[in-house]
Every structure is written in structure tokens, then in C-alpha cells.
Amino acid sequence: MKLYSGDLSPYSAKVRMQIYAKGIEDIELARPPGFPQAGFSKVSPIARIPALDLGDEVIAESEVISEYLEELYPAPPLLGASPRERARIRTVSRIADIYVMNNIFMCIPQGRRSSRNDGVRDLLTGQTARGVRTLDQYLDGTGFAVGGELSLADCTLVPALFLVENVTPTFDVPDPLKDAPKVAAYWSAIQQNPHAARVLVELHRGLEERRELMRKAES
Ligand SMILES: N[C@@H](CCC(=O)N[C@@H](CS)C(=O)NCC(=O)O)C(=O)O
Image (cartoon, rainbow, N blue to C red; front, top):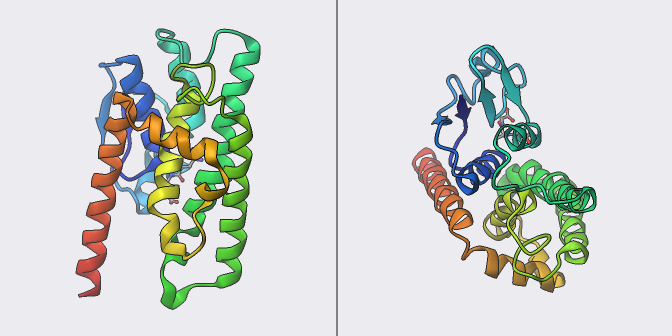
């Protein structure tokens, strides 16, 4: 199997963190051919990363890939030990994905002051802050998102909070973590986890590459 992914793609980082945490070694990490141009749609019709290439079929969407890998590689389990725990893990993962990661991702063009639309910026950052405040009520304060051990909720939260810390400041809005003390404490703690630390190195590397490209384009 091959995972098409990119350093700076938070959705890809989520799946890579799961792969690292499970110790999976037989999935090749590959650059997506033709991406980000439409050429990648020949590989995966949705034309987004991550995408998991099975050889005769390509699975899209990070959440779907994660659940598929969880079934193929059940140990160590990252989806909880009971239906109730699984529901909590999936809830936190969805809040981090849909309400935090997605809104920040959509807002990225608003980081450019010269072409910013304040209405769009306010809508998306308002929804992001609301998502972060919601997370504050779900985290259990153990240093992991749910159940005192690493789970898929952490795999989604780590890249989501990377975006909060590194991309949100470009929008010139207050830090969403200021109103979310449990999320802030979680963020400090989870960065010590080796699998989180590994994807954070990759995400920072991707961000530096992107900034360098933008500096070159502007000079
Ligand atoms: N909901 C998707 C989102 C994937 C996504 O949007 N990935 C970005 C990179 S982080 C992408 O491929 N963007 C290309 C595009 O928007 O055309 C998932 O969870 O996998």
C-alpha cells in the first residue's frame, strides 16, 4: 500500500501519526503524482490528500483511511476499548477536523492582508474559536485527548492545533487557545509524545518550505 501525503497537509499528518503510533512499516509514504494540479484526479477522483493506494483501488478522506487502517492493523488499538469510548474518540476527532482544521484551512487565503475579505475571515475564525471552546469541554485533562492514552482523537488534534498555533496568527485575530485552558494544557503536554513530535517536525518542515516558496514568488 502507498499513502499519498505531504509534509504540510494536516489531514495527511493525521494518518501519518496513526501509522507511526501503530508501528506500521509496510505502507510506503509517497508524493502525490500531479498534485496539487488536477492531474491527481486521475489517481483519486477527489484530488485531495491523503489518499491510500491499495493497488487496484484508492481510498480517499483521512477519517475513512484511518478507520480502514484501524481495521487492518488492530494493534495497538487507537479507537478505544468500548462503544462509549469509541464514540468519545470519534466526537473529539470530528470536532478537531470539521470545526477547527477545516475552518482554518478554508481561511488560509485570508492570511494575505492585501486581499483579505474581513467578513470571510470573521466567519471562519469565529467558527474555529467556537470549535476550540467546544473541545475544552471534551478533553479529559490526562495529557491525551480521551481515555488517558493515545487515540485517533490525538492524531486529529495534533495537526489541528499546529494550525491554530502557526496559521491562525496570520489572520490577525485573538488566539483561540486563550479561552480554552484545557486545550492549551493538552497542547503543551501532547507535544512531548514521540509520534506527535515526529509529525510536528514534518509539519514545520512543510511550513518552512511553503514560506520559502512564497518569499521567492514575492521577490
Ligand atoms: N476532508 C479531507 C480533506 C483533504 C484536503 O482537503 N486535503 C488538502 C491538503 S491538506 C488538499 O488535498 N487540497 C487540495 C485541494 O483543495 O484541491 C480529508 O479529511 O482527507
